[in-house]
Amino acid sequence: MQFNLSDKFAGRMEKQWLADSFVKPHTNGSLEFDGVDTVKIYVPTTVPYNDYKREGTARYGDPSEIVPNVHLYKMEQDKAYTGTIDLGNSRSRSIGAATGEWVKNQNAQVVIPFEDKYALNKYASLGAVAEAAAVTEQTALAELEKARAAFVNQRVPVENRVVWCSPKVVSALAESKQFTEVEKLAVDAVRKGEVGRCKTFRVIETPEDLMPAGCQFICAHKSALVQADKITELKVNTTPQGISGTLIEARNLFDAFVIGSLAKGVYTLVETGKKQACNVKISAHTATVTAAGAQSIYYTLDGSDPRFSKNRTIVATGGTVTTQKGQTIKCVAFAPDGKFTSDVVSATDNS
Image (cartoon, rainbow, N blue to C red):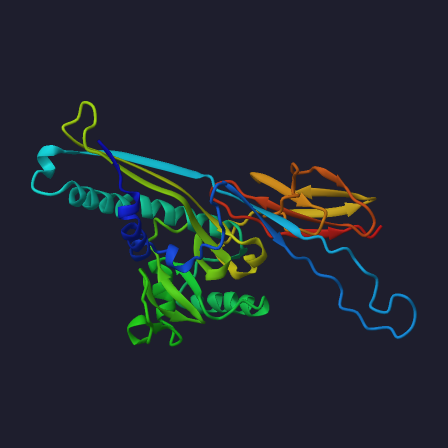
């Protein structure tokens, strides 16, 4: 006999994710994946803000067609696990109790850490990336101040800002008078790993093994991040063939995303030399893109962000792209393991 206990455990598992995850409580679920694995988000574009002219036929300026950019988000993580509970080991408890205990341990020890690490790596690769020498007690606060200033300049809201960092970075920040320990804060809910506030950010002390290698901290605004689940399935078979006991099977279809139009709300500090380089130059209506050692390089010609755009095109390092007068090319290089994404670089054909 097989029972689908996903409904029974759904609420309980969601609470566990929020309680045990260092990441998910600080993300949102604004992308809807029901029935599909890929979502398209239409991003409005802008037009110039002109001086009004009181004469002529173009008094408001020259009208431009408003064509939205399209960002694509594809759910790619389809994971599963299975295990058995021998009848002799569960004799003193109900199937539900034994299953719940095992699943809770599996989630806490394996599933949640995997999803947290995956999400942090994804977030670190899709926002702004800055480089600096390993932070110390003398430099940690100044580096976090740069992130705060970047958020101010990009008009990122103050509420719901977080920074994930290792115990070493937390220790360096804690030496500052501007670090307020969480025990002294009047907060409604303290999430896992939250140890205080500094420079408008909630400080989330994150285990070293969950942080991307070479990453010193990741600052983000909640609205910019998604950690979405499409399938969270748990099945319990109480009469499996060849087993005296219970067979548990689980499947999680999930992914983590940075919302392209809000990517300005993600700022990662990495160690010097860990950021991928990317350059583009235009001569005689030909753009040359260079990004030695990159895993993949993308460009757009329609003004959209090549990190997220549906219209992006891949190009090899040293490759060329034909441009027209007045056209702007935007490029980004995604790095191999051990490095982080380049800046989005651009050049305009003025020839």
